[in-house]
Amino acid sequence: MSIVHFEGLGQFQQDNATLHASRVATKWLQEHCSDFRHFHWPPKSPEMNIIEDIWDALLRAAEKRSPLPCTPMDLLTALQDSWCEFPPGYLQTPVESMPRHFASLLRAHGGPTRY
Image (cartoon, helix red, strand yellow):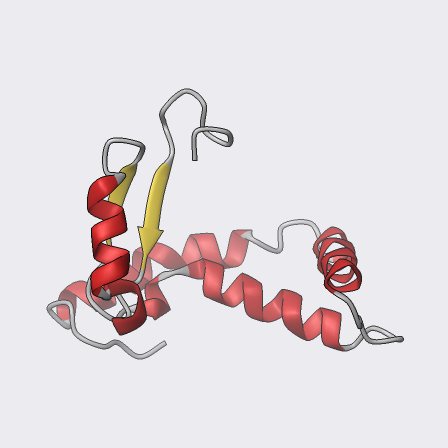
């Protein structure tokens, strides 16, 4: 975090899925809480994280490549190339959808929402 956000403005987010809320993960977050700000998402609400959609799109694009990536370096290259091939403004749609998603989450009182 300090490399990417050397001015101390970085913020860590996670969706509080069971795996991310394990004792080990929780302990690590507590031990490193002074290194970054931790944005608390509602429990088990991955639909609120646009990063999931972006990863899905990147992985689908990489899977369509020929030849398929066979090594970790091939996969990295395929993901980077796929990122560069996204149309201009690709991220605008998920970013603009966030207020609507947050409103749904509030109406559901933090519970599951329809995507």
